[in-house]
Amino acid sequence: MQTAIVLHDRFTALDAVGPYEMLGRLPGAETVFVAERTGPVRADTGQLALIADRTLADVPRPDIVVVPGGPEQTLPTRNEALLEWLRTADAASTWTTSVCTGSLLLAAAGLLRGRRAASHWLSLDGLTPYGARPTGDRVVLDGKYVTAAGVSAGIDMGLTLLGRIAGDAYARAVQLMTEYDPQPPYDAGAPHKAPGDLVDRMRARFTPARSR
Amino acid sequence: MQTAIVLHDRFTALDAVGPYEMLGRLPGAETVFVAERTGPVRADTGQLALIADRTLADVPRPDIVVVPGGPEQTLPTRNEALLEWLRTADAASTWTTSVCTGSLLLAAAGLLRGRRAASHWLSLDGLTPYGARPTGDRVVLDGKYVTAAGVSAGIDMGLTLLGRIAGDAYARAVQLMTEYDPQPPYDAGAPHKAPGDLVDRMRARFTPARSR
Image 1 (cartoon, each protein chain N blue to C red):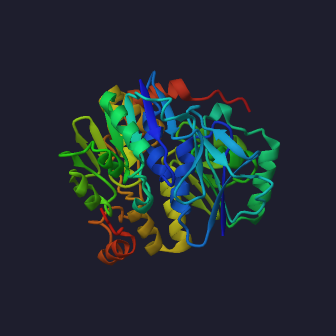
Image 2: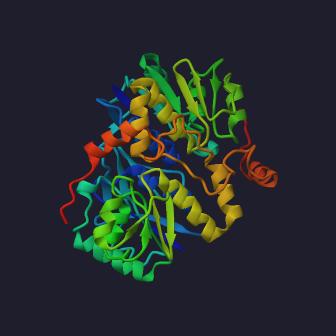
Image 3: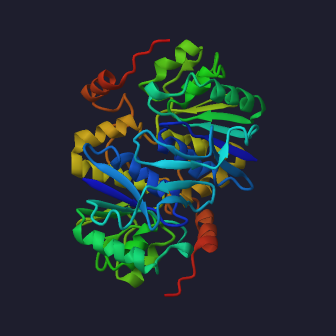
């Protein structure tokens, strides 16, 4: 079994590393970080780069595809080479997954038409023009498509998928070994929980102008 | 303000990327990934490498030091160059922090004597020979020393520290933007929550032979 995590310029690092830390512990499986070119791919803050060990062409038929997101404005939703790779990989995949705005890339590739899908809460509306059905849930399973909400939701997505593939007992073991017993010091991690003025401010500042 | 995240061979990737995703969003701050040499540093699974953009020598006086962990057996607790850098950096730091077994590196550098400290639940006993006081809490603050439990606890540590530095309102904004509203599909993320036989099995398999 092979998992491909797709790096693209200005991806959000935790979107990729959260699922990796869960799915990368699948017994007998290989996890590979792929990009158009091998070598460093810099994340959205500019302060961190991950290495793509293989090119997209090197890994044409992964069993699991994981697509991280990034700031909606700079997402490569018109990168035809990447979209075509996603279509081809998806045609053979067992699971096609995304974290955060990564679902916009799956949608742009035409893979989420008519499907329920999650995304970063500020980018849910961006799914609609592609024919996907935005859903505010943290992890959304629709057939073999598993999409997660923003950034940190990739950990929940990865652990959920690990349970489906390797069984609940195995997933619990990974949860215990990664000590995933979250205790956030605040309770502002979702728009329905955060203070209303904060939600409004973030919406005003970060909602992208959508021009499709 | 400068945050240095220290990469070492076979670090656990989420230990580093969790705090980065929180503290890397500090206003007006710079986050740098450092290691003995610049270039790729491979994580514990072998399946992922992060880039160290600067050497330890390039970054002698960061305001915040973040030390990720890794498998206890391969931790560089006898790497004198690294320990000496930690001592020097700590002498000038505002905050000295760790995730998972990273606290064993701080302890090996002599920085946690008499201090309460967290670590991966399987490695808490490893703190004692260095004179630290192991604590089962997820995030432990003792003076300027902030240590976190295993792997995913670095997210809670980073968000906690962000609140201390930039204020609760700012930390809540980062929590909302990273959608950190965890919903683990299981409740086995800590030894007192996981099934007893699972805890015993993990303890039998992974407790390192300590030979100090």
